[in-house]
Length: 293
Image 1 (spheres, rainbow, N blue to C red):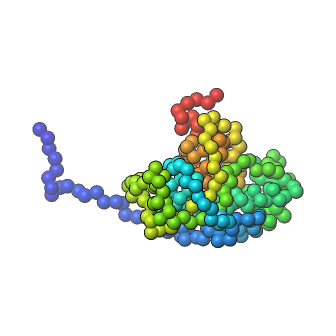
Image 2: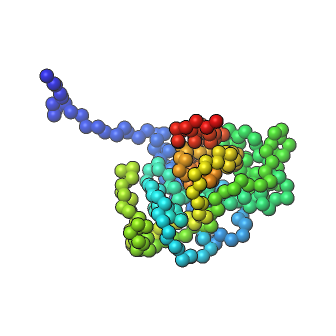
Image 3: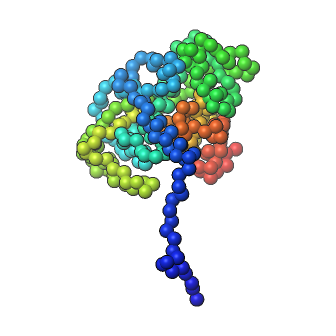
């Protein structure tokens, strides 16, 4: 015998009512996505390294519109499609979901300022060796600004880390826009497909223009270079970035490919509980289910 509730006793599921905390967080997410993050000036020469520029990083544009040679479609996801560049929608997603293109542009702009500071300096730039709070993260990032370099806050700190070079980072040449009509006119094997991801239908429309980030192409390398990955991860951590859950697919030849996998101290998604030294060995073991000696 089976029993069940009759129609009169059935209850329809309703989402929980928003709390003051969740409403406030959603407002912060929406406000963050309204911030400017693109600079129409071409990416040429050194970026401005005033602290105000670190606080609102702007990525400069690709200096010229190239004749794009579409060789292969590398993959696609909720945030965009990758060929030799990453294509993203130009409208921020609603609610708490971060805008991947915005996050990636801001992160790249910050890294370009940091790289310029180290390359232009005749002296080491000193960082706190074990940052673990938002203040530590901000102060380490501040060290690369014009104001921070004059102050040299950590120069006399025991065990301070001196930086005279930058670990290899994937080079970004700036941002550009690509007409949707051009993408839809590609050969069938290259054409972006209409797919449903995370219950959201994603498609490229011929009537729209789409943002693209222009990166150097990193060839596939079957060897996982743990030491190179750890060096880059440590550098990013000391700069103040915390990591989202890491996917090994987003690394190649020891380099982080997806710059939306890190979160700068200004972003809503930055979390002090997640701001710890990343251990690449743990990522690799988790991702491939193997033990690394």
